[in-house]
Amino acid sequence: MAWWGWGDPDLARPLSPEMSSLVREALGVRRDGPPVPSLEGLDLPESRMPPEVAEHLSQIVGPNQLSAEREPRVGHLRGKSTSDLLRLRLGDLSDAPDLVVMPGSHQEILDVLELCTAERIAVVPFGGGTSVVGGLAPRRGDSFQSMLALDLQRLNRLTGLDEESRLATLEPGLRGPQAEARLGERGYTLGHFPQSFEYASVGGFAATRSSGQASAGYGRFDERVVGLTVATPRGTVELGQAPRSAAGPDLRQLFLGSEGTLGVLTSLRVEISPAPAVRRYEGWRLPDFAAATAVVRRFAQDGPAPTIVRVSDEVETALNLARPELAGTSGGAGCLLITGWEGSATEVQERAEAVRQMLGQFGAEPVPEAGPDWAAGRFSAPYLRDALLAAGALVETLETACFWSGLPRIYAAVRQALVDSLSGLGTPPVVLCHISHIYRSGASLYFTVACAQNDDPVRQWQQAKTAASDAILTAGGTISHHHGVGTEHRYWYHRQLGPVMLDALRAVKRELDPAGILNPGVLV
Figure 1 (cartoon, helix red, strand yellow):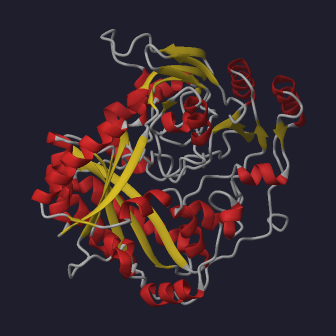
Figure 2: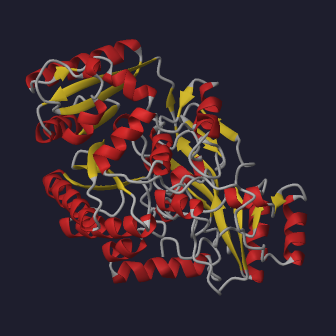
Figure 3: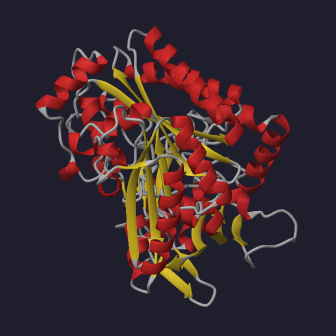
């Protein structure tokens, strides 16, 4: 992945002159954003890793499996949020790791953690590097003499397949496409396709409680994890002897969502599904967001549920349907609903037909090509974000979840908080929203915000995010549905958790990681 932005650098494209003109007019952009700097021109702090510690690490993982060179260190700096990229483009490399270490086994990770505990070295477990909430920006401070990025890319095998139980045992460094390819060779799929799919890792899916675009059909990733092996500074943890158990609390849940703060996931046993013979995507337009929300609530509570469900509000729909051939025949844009089905040809046909009949009862109109167009571009939005940053726009996302009864309240409160905050800074925004995941009792809301950058775009977004996060908790939502906590959500996560459970979580951290070396300052 590009060290300066998202994804394959060969796929990065600047905005067209026509799009640049539209952005300037719509958002009031007056100047370009910070350019991508030269890697060699960046002021990278000298590595603080003691030579004797680096030598010991080399003996553990092998002399070719660690590096203090410029490009690996910058490539493991933070994640891919807008704030992360803006800080990098503005030349802030202050929290770059001192060393990148690539272990090749569970035992090597245990040995690395033992050494780092003894030497007071902070350790940041690194999968795909796709965090957008500061999950790779630990607080090193003066507590640690140096910090290393523990890159898990060498742990990339499918190590077991139980076809009778439909379980696969995967190593954490497998990227999404690698996992699908290995399982696909045996006729199976994970069914997990978040927007970060092309670069995020299996370990990262588990460590952040990732939820993919097909969650209505396959479920969240953490729901499909039935077993874990974890390397901690205290030793090895093995969890998951059965699909469900009444033997006390399910301690797998301690590590699912722990974001590398309690241990390093080294093996995951996950439920898999037969690879679908057919994938079909369709688009529908409904009169407004309330009507579209009622439809997908019906999907979730009474069925039939598509594999993929996504509802765009009026603003997002207007942008999605800007192409005349997709605009349909009615006067307004309404709200766009994307439905998708995966399975056998017969199953897909039957489910799709049942959904079409129900949508007809709600007055939905088909939108030709909207479904296939969404599927074709489902992983490409971060590339557009990077181009907009260069053009002087500030673009970022945030998400939450709540019960159906509270969804209108949270939708209104978060939109208003973003509009008021950014307008108060002289940069009135465009705010888009869609329902991205549905459940029997509620759904998630995913907001995209765009405005002109001001003189300090990092602080500009921090102020807006603070206002939106306050609004989420006040209105009764969760601070994160699938992006995780990291450092950016930590304050609100602590408020949401409450003092008793926060102390309990800190106690677990002290037991498993007594020296606090794992991702310090992330989560807790």
